[in-house]
Amino acid sequence: MHFANKLVWVSRDIFIVFALLVYAGCNDESDPVPSQLELLQRKGGWNLTSSKIDPPLETPNGLISDTYPGILPCHKDDILVFSADGKVTIIDELLCDPPETNFPPGVYFFDESKKLLSINGELGSEVEITISELKFNLKGTIDGIPRTLSLRYVGK
Image (cartoon, rainbow, N blue to C red; front, side, top):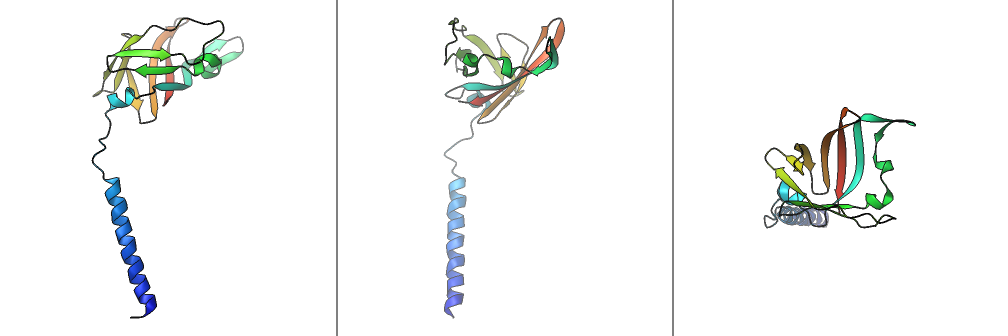
């Protein structure tokens, strides 16, 4: 057998062994997939990155649907934490000037089978949770008009 042919066979064998090792490493069953509730209760909590309202609010400057720019910078760093005991807490990282009182802990209920999240007894909202993102809607009435506030958080 020529040297070039041997090199091809050795290269092929090394590739097969490498591919098997990579595949075996990816199928490690010691790391179970977290449940939706475990994702919601992630250590470190959630940080708000987007807030939109529909239908838009009428203001002297026109209609506003993106409400995130109007949030004070000292609230944009607040962390939303869902604990295993059913409490939801807002941790205020950067205090506003003048300082505000911290929000008291609320309660939440998460129906994992229906992916519905209720906070402080409000009607449940459908939730999308991934390892790094949380999305849900709050429904309410502002200025006599039913509106939906869509919130997006990223994992802290």
